[in-house]
Amino acid sequence: MSDLKEYDVVVVGGGPAGLSAACLLAEQKLSTAIVSPFYPKPVPQGQRDPRTIAMMQPSVRLMEHMGLWPTELESVSSPLKHLRLLDDSGNLLSGTEVTFNCQELSDQPFGWNVPLPDLSLALLALAKKSGFDFYEDEALGAPLKGDGVLVQLKNLDDLVAKVVVAADGRASNLRKSAGIGIAQWSYDQVAIGAVFAHSGPHNDMSTECHKQDGPLTTVPMPDNHSSLVWMVRPERGKELMSLSAKSFAGELQLELHGELGIISDVINRKSFPMQGMNAMTYASNRVILIGEAAHVVPPIGAQGLNMSLRDGAMAAELIGDACRFGEDIGGDKVLTKYDTNRRRDVWPRQKVIDLMNRSLLSKLPFIHDARALGLNLVDRITPLRNAVMREGISPTENLPRVMQT
Ligand SMILES: Cc1cc2nc3c(=O)[nH]c(=O)nc-3n(C[C@H](O)[C@H](O)[C@H](O)COP(=O)(O)OP(=O)(O)OC[C@H]3O[C@@H](n4cnc5c(N)ncnc54)[C@H](O)[C@@H]3O)c2cc1C
Image (cartoon, helix red, strand yellow):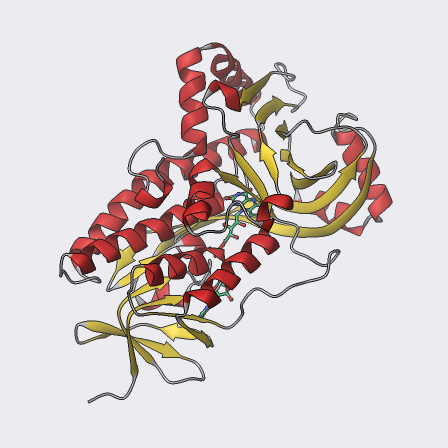
């Protein structure tokens, strides 16, 4: 008999996608372990990851389900009551804009803007309370072993699982080991993330300004602060990163045409290369891919982690259901259902984000006019407007049960 430790599920990757999936699996009384070389740690303000996550209502409902909302997370977050798309590309129809107001859909905000470091630490604290096993190591692969998989670790003893949930990020070892190919591409852009203060109010509005080199997005935070995602060409990115905080604030104020008043106190500036990636299948050989192990999108329309949280919740739901019905939790039925469900959600979003981004980078004037015209139509045609709003928040069908109203 093997003396290796056996689990129902091993989750690989201690980022927000992996931690949330592991908590949901452990909740269903499945024996669960998580493996990651790093877990979130508190980092002083000024050196933190600048990313904030515009968590849409279904993701907020997931946090409620896990007991993480409303908690102290709410006090560091801001409601998203208005979402504005603005064409500021300088082309013929520049100036076109559409503003969605949450009251058009319900009495709830569209979602909340939550700092990623706070979210990650809250998920880690919950995971520690959930009582499943933690391993601090790198997973190298997960070959099939009998009716399960062997999770090979770099330094510690290997583990055995019936199914593996791979949340080990965009360079996923587990994806490669399961023989899953990818399509990947890069954009001639970087995204500069930062947090800044402003003298004017943001009125709980997130604005995505479509500029010639990519969108510049501001997302509200408490106390007249906002987070920034500014997509620019790499050479401009280098220039902006080399500026003093004060000069950067001046450049940003200009780009925003003074809309948020005087910009100051820019902190946590970081540049992210812009890439896209999609796995050929999201599940194979007893390995289920979630988060950036499955798909990577540029930060447009706040889709990345929202999709990843749906991945984790759907994986936990299907594995839990199979267990209750006495079925193989890593069998083809679970894997096929997962792949079909997630593809329907991720694929169209990835395509829309890609098209939107490429239309900004295009040198063809009619592409810019078509984009601005599209915005105009969305603004004026009510059924189209409502459909864009609803689908922008989440898929209207096949949401994991823990995210449904
Ligand atoms: C500027 C910017 C703004 C964004 N804004 C938003 C937004 O508003 N809304 C939104 O939904 N999304 C947003 N995103 C996307 C979001 O940040 C990412 O989708 C998310 O953080 C990825 O989480 P993850 O858990 O999948 O991956 P990661 O956070 O990369 O986690 C991967 C984990 O796997 C571990 N790991 C790696 N290799 C191994 C191994 N071999 N074995 C074990 N563990 C391993 C790592 O240590 C890490 O813990 C934004 C992204 C950017 C760049």
